[in-house]
Image (cartoon, rainbow, N blue to C red; front, top):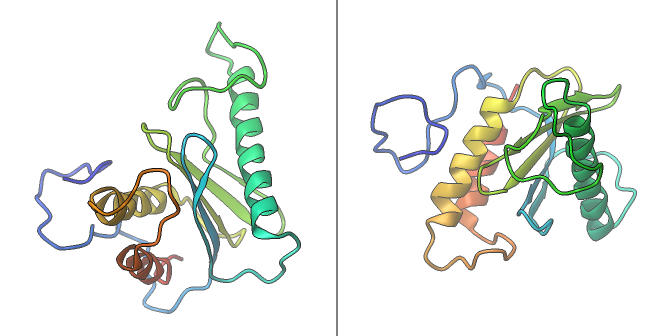
Length: 177
C-alpha cells in the first residue's frame, strides 16, 4: 500500500508508479536539489542534479534550508486568517498543524515543500517556470517509504544510503517537467 495513493488499484510493481503528467520523454534538467529532513531537522538526504553555483558547504546549506522552512511554517501559521489560536511565532508546529505553504518562486528557482504526517520534510528546488510539484513530492515520499522505511537494515534517523532508493529517485527526477 502506498501512502498518499488515491486509487484502489493494487500496485504489484516493485517501485511506486509515477504521477501522471510528469514525464516528458526527454531527459529533464529542471530539478536542481532535493532535501529530505526528519522531524528533528536532521538532513537524511541531500541530492544535487543541476546546481550551477555552490556557495556554502553542505552542512551550512542544510541548516539554512531547515531554518528557512521552520520560519516559513511558523510565519504562515501566525498569518492564518482562519485559526483564532495562532500561538507564538517561532514555536514548533506539529505536522499538519496550522496553515501551510506548498511552494514559493523567485526569479532563479522554485522551492516546493511537503511534510508527511510523520514529520518527514521533502524540499525540491527546481527551475522557476516549472508547475506544481505536490504530486511529484508525494511520489518521492512513496519511494522513500518503499525503499528506505521498509528496509529492515535502515536505522531510523540516519542518512539514507540505499542505492535502490537513489537509483529510482534519479530515474524519476529525469522525468520531471
